[in-house]
Figure: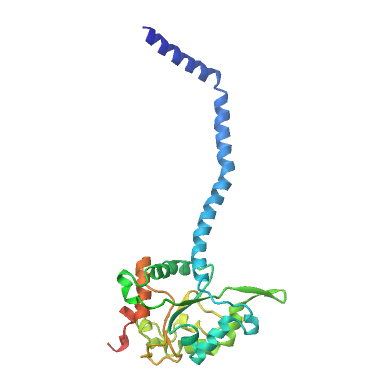
Length: 269
């Protein structure tokens, strides 16, 4: 009986506390609501910070391979020199006998998607299914085609200077390219917008080159399709693969001339 009385007194106290402090409960609820409201900006800021860091990862990765556009307005940037070397055929000595050349932008969802494939390939270079790459050196050059500089009180696109000085070269990049292995696989033609955008200008005379666009140069292999630029083997505007592994496999096959990059003649099969 004593135990029951003790339990009864305990619940009686709780009942009196609820009765006597009922006015506090709405205040607690209101306080909780305002606390949540005031914390939302910090929560959003935190989420944005995470998203920003994740988004910047691909930019940092491409930046590690980027070539400087500094002094492009005077035709004296490292990118200008690269195109001079490509025109003369010296890129095999100044860059590498095999290399990727990729044009990207910082705000580019496809660049971010492709980055996963690039990263996976590099991290697994010479290993497992990519063991045939062992002993070879991965080489990639990236150019940020959205890089700007304030010139005469106006922000100018630096790559635009390079492109205007090399329009005919970009036209040569696309000339007869529909006969390349990958172009045949993708059923590209000379009238394909992606290819004409290599050398066509917009209404203001600026480049229309798409981001991303990837060239693959291999000076160890002759071009079977009669390309007009020495060493240029393939041009890709996008490459297949739903996962990072699939994308890496595509890049591996491009480097090794396997799969859809093998010597075929799709149009005559």
